[in-house]
Length: 554
Image (cartoon, rainbow, N blue to C red; front, side, top):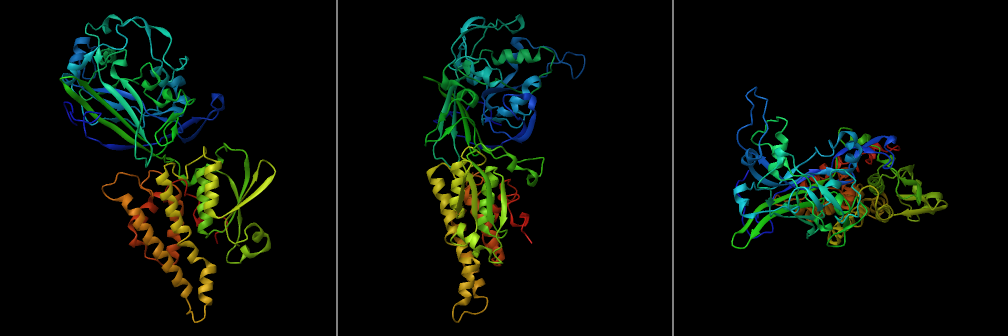
């Protein structure tokens, strides 16, 4: 832990950057948002949020009352001021949908306990003293143009128009909280968001520590008023720091006004709450002419996908998720347990949480050449995805990549994201997909190997050799394409494109590694691909989609 204060040229006044990670939590979610009497269900948080806060570490000797080691005595305002060791930025991560279910009558619990991120520097009160100022309230008590933002973050629906307007009475402190030196510090605060693989960040909030009505000194005095012994190293946070204007709101809940507004990001993306792979970057600094800058460094972390612990991910029935798009119904997947193309579609259906019926087309028995299937797929291949459009029109789509793109577009707001939104990332995902789909997998199909065997002068087993060579060429290309995303100096995630969640690239890669082993390819030559495979094996998208789990597996 660093003491003092950082100084430098960055917006945060410190060039120290540490990007940590935070796992999206699972918990109890209200089944019907309008009717809590319908109970709860277990699943991953869908409304993940940050809260912009400033926290402080307690220092000094514990406030004992001489009647026992665990008994304390209240701190006066003057004593509380002396006990504050130093300040940090804090992201008090919040799961808003879990919070909605549990906060009445218990208050926030599991919606808040899964993660806390703090900045890299601990800045002492001495370093901040030159930047002392009044709070945005001016004086405590009386009528004030208050901010609604913090109250909304804490789960209280205060009404209003979301612009921080409307008079309210500020509380007058009781005697033990009255501070003759009431005030704050002029600490500029910002929050920026960076989607996964995006090259730029977008600042979505600019606030100031002086927007807090209660000071840190008052907070510590109040915390101790019951006799709570305050120990060195205790960490207390301010609560969400929001100002009066919309761009001063210190959480996604406030910025999107409970999900009713979109927050525009550079590059064309929008957010209401955080998505997997999003990085939240908080910065804080003080600056005054003649005094330079004092900075806190960054408080930064990236959101990782949820793990459905404590339940075995194979038992999570994602197919039971309600479909948000009722135009397309009654899905059937015509495939074969060993078909890697059908396997890709099974992963995509799992990712979107779409229930479907499986219809086996036995490639060993040449079922794909029979009239009924050939009419659905003139190429006499699998897969075929069949569904009903609008209640009465039966639609059939062939070719796995066409099917996956349809699912991504038709169910854009349901389940996982199959294709990255960033243009470059999407192109790279499709590049990996085409290396598999066009340059590798077709060359090891049964029909191709049979044709190789039938050539005049071909020796026995030449089809298998041809298929093995196609796999080796394809995997070598994929290793070269994906290795740069997984070097020791990169800070990305474990999936194919260095992301923290899978996408089309992973969907195509995993079945092809399975194929390569059938052809006795030495996969140890492709260490990057094996690491990606390890990350995918335990991910819910892939669990249950593997050949051995299919009803027609022998």
